[in-house]
Image (cartoon, rainbow, N blue to C red):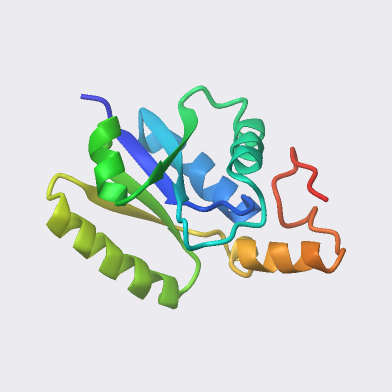
Length: 153
């Protein structure tokens, strides 16, 4: 049986921290699906198509990584694609508490799922998509916060 993980998120936009966690997880899984969650109540800065294109550009060199989108419960998407793992990156202790509670609920909803946490590298701890969006809104240069293969203006 293949070890398939999903890495869910909005990736609005993808950051160097996201990229680092995903690349470091590649040896752990046979396949990683970067799963763009669609939330009708959330206004995204970038369209679903743009975010999908960004991710495909960043991971063009990784045949075991794909990108897909979903709405609804993450565990239902896991069942649909045959994923046994949810991959999450942790930047802070607050991230751990939040992700732990979600992981425990997911386990109750779908006992076969395992949540795997990877620590963000120290140099990426302060980076998140909200900060990148704020810099973009104010005309700043985000190149040091997004993957090197991307150009976002």
